[in-house]
Length: 194
Image 1: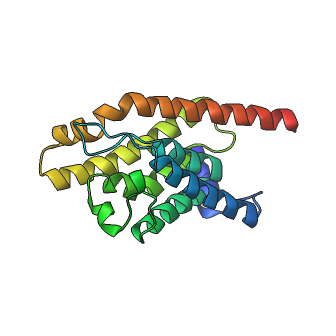
Image 2: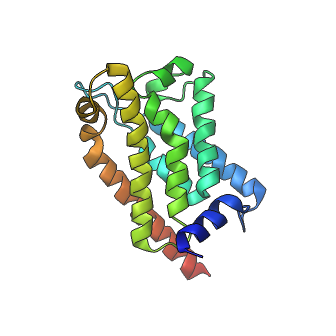
């Protein structure tokens, strides 16, 4: 069986092994809360309706740290709570209409981004594979965000990229690297403790 097929089988189709249900539930709630907190540190840029936040870091880390399914559940919980009216979106925004606005595509893509990051980053994944998984997770966010910006603005792909990707690439590369080195450090600590 190929390693990709094995990864899908073990990360998606089989139950999470070695994780107590209570511990996993705490992790899901913790990542949903941390993502909500990270949204409150939003910086508006004058040339785009999309703010700079730490959310991409927490979204991809949820998938890597909790696993693909639990990470996706954590992000789906975050988005659902915000859609139902809790002020958890950027700068305290809330409600279903927020998901139809310029940042809604990123929010709706968050569960998929966590899933993608978690799927590619098993606990013992090679460092290059981990880096690739984190990058694909952020790319999944971009895909959702750009698709919604194209639909909202009626402009072409180039315009949506200039509003929703280009201003954020340097910051998101920094977030990917922070997640990467953080996860590698945690792995080293776990190995030294065992």
